Length: 126
Image (cartoon, rainbow, N blue to C red):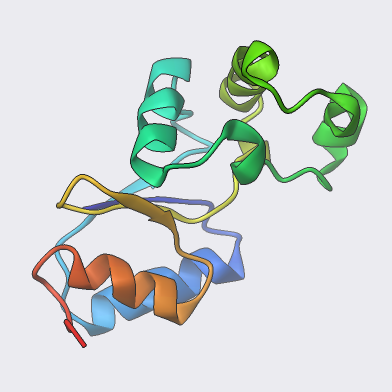
């Protein structure tokens, strides 16, 4: 299991605390220091079952500067969004947890983090 975090984010810190409390085995990726490539974003989107606009923090100053609010949310515009996320990783919703079963989720709630744990065999299944 891997978790993409920004250590300054309270949701990320809470997710890491929960994973630690459950004794989970995971790898931390500080995605602002080690930004994902466009290919890695495509792969995580596939695992999430989401589109790039679904994981974009559209209220960030960078998003407003780029004007992403006016971008189309279509297959034709998909690559534009992915390239923006790769170039501006601060726009990526966090934390993203890639589970051992091949799935991924955005772990913004305790329930979502526990769901990720249940997909790894490390945590509670109920």
